[in-house]
Image 1 (cartoon, one colour):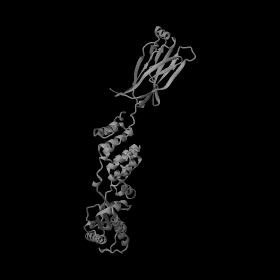
Image 2 (cartoon, helix red, strand yellow):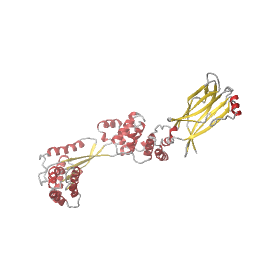
Image 3 (cartoon, helix red, strand yellow):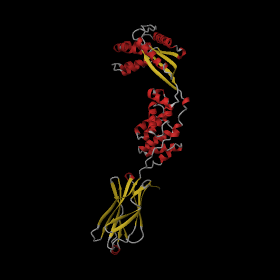
Image 4 (tube, helix red, strand yellow):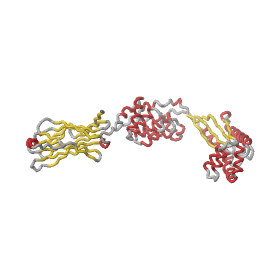
Length: 470
C-alpha cells in the first residue's frame, strides 16, 4: 500500500475549538491519500479532554471534510462533563454513530478513512462544535472554517531548460556549409519548329532579362559563391515525340549558350531536357473543370506511347483538345532554371545581427545561436532569438527543440506542441514532450516520456518526474 503524505496549511500547531463556555483543543491534524484500488483518504486528529467543560454539559465535535462542491460529516465525538457522562452510563444512553468520552483524561487519537474521489485532490478539514446541557446564554454552535487545507494535486514544475545538453547539439560554425538554391521558370519563345533563340522575339526581352537579373543578384553578392547553374527545358505534347525531343534539347542548348555568353560559367552551367511535359499536363487537367476530365486523365495515365496519347486526345476529345492546345500547351513549353550557391560563414555576432535584419535566409542555426549566446541565459532577448531560429529553420529539429522550451517557459503550449512535433526522436525531445504533457495535466502520458529522459540523464527530467503523481 502506497501512502502519500502532503504538506498542509494549518492555523497553528494546535487550534482551540470553542463553543459557548466550553473549550476542546484539537491538534495533530493530518490527511493522507492512500493509493491503490480502491484508494482512500485517511483523516487523523487528536482531541484533548479538558476539565473546563461544565459537569452537566457536553461538547459535540464533528469533523467535516470539504472537497469540490461536496462535504462529508465524519464520526462526531461527544466530550462530556462528569455528571453528563455518568448519566449516559447509568441510563445506557450511548449515542449511535458517535464517540463518547469524559472531559478529563489523556488526549485521544482518532483515525478514520473515506473512499477516494478525484474531487478530493483539494480537501479541507473543518470542525463544527456544539455545546449542549448548559443553561447559560452562550450555548450554541461554533465553527473554525478552514482549519486544515491539503492540496494533493501534483506540485507545479518550474521548467528546467537543459542548456548545456542543447548547446552540445550545435556544430562549429566553421564546419557548417550553407548551400542555397534559387529556382525559377522562364517562357522563352521560338518560332515554330525552330531552335534558334531570338532575344527580341515576342516576350523574350522580358523573359531573358529576368533570367540574367536573377543570376546577377546572386553573383553580385560578395557573400555568395555560385556552385552550379542548371537549365531544364520542356516541350509540349503536340507534334511527334521525336521532333519534340530534338526541340527540347536544342532550345535548352540555345538558352545555355545565351546565358554563358553573359557570364562565362563554362562547366558550372549544365542542361537537361524533357521532350514532352505530360506531368505538367496532367496536373492542369486534374485541377480543371473540363467536362471529360476523368476520361482525359485515363488517357494521360495509360501505357500508350506519347504520340498515341496525343492522337487519342485530339480525336477523342476535340473540344477539350482545343483548350489544351491553345491555353495549356504554350505554358508547358518552358525552361526551368536553378542557381545553386554557397553562403559564407559569419563568426562575429554584430555581423550576424545585421544579416538577421536584412537577409536572414543567409544564416545557419549555429550562427543565430552564436548571437543568442551574447545575451544572458533566460533573458527575453535570448528567448526571442531562439523563437526566431525556430521560425527560420522549420526543418531543423534542433531549432524546433530550442524554440519549444521557450514556448513551454512562456506557457504557449500550442506553439510548443507544434515545435515538438518537428523535434525528432531523442531523450531531449522526450523531455520536452513530457513537460508538455505534464503542463496539460496528462500525467499518465508524461510519465513514460520523462522516465526515458531521466534514464538518459537529461537535466530537469528527474525533477519533472516527481510532479507526475496523480
